[in-house]
Image (tube, rainbow, N blue to C red; front, side):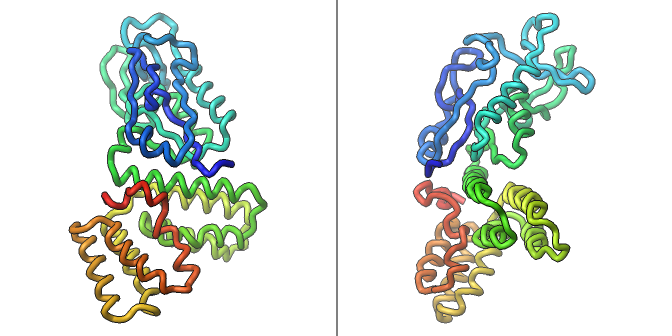
Length: 318
């Protein structure tokens, strides 16, 4: 395996002119930033099923409980691309079982992972709760796979969250290259404890209870439930309140090796962050400065200090 993440992506986001109007939707974040951390596997499912460029636009149409994908204007009788797009999604995932994540084109009837416009058979819009058929097939093939749509990645909190999930899921895939034991599960989770606490305290408690394994469940059963809980918990967006709570918890460890004056400085840094005066990177920088004094591997190895590549600078904006 390479050191880079492996990420599927809608081809139009890479600047490929594959959209219905022969245009593209190049994502500056994906091309300039994420590309430094990931190798992309681009695909345009509409081109993959044989549609030309340019081509008539397509849309999701709900007929009772059935979703069809048909041309937007003057639909041809019997034309429905739903099954073809589903098949492309399934085949893509079979060819690339080692993906670490996926970036989809938002609002697309083929690639949109959520909130896609759905129409009635009479041509009127029904709702905006649809999912593109290719994206749906990808999600069903691997429900754990971190994904986002390009539109949501313009939000810096969501962007940072996505990078966290990509990193954690990649490490999980690496762990699964070897046989699992309860000891390996606990060792894997240990560096992520405070990262998970920042996202969801309920998931944090649930994982702790699960790994205690008082019911003596088989390790494979525990592993399945564990990664579901971990990835689901990390989907929750951490905010200033939850980050401040984690920093206060971590401060308890620092009492062992910093004096009262330094502890007060750390408390002030947390408070400034909580109030929105400074970004998260400010208290973290101070904490990591003092962390150099610690010989506690458990504390030093927490991924919370740097859950993704520091050069991305993502915590300078949240």
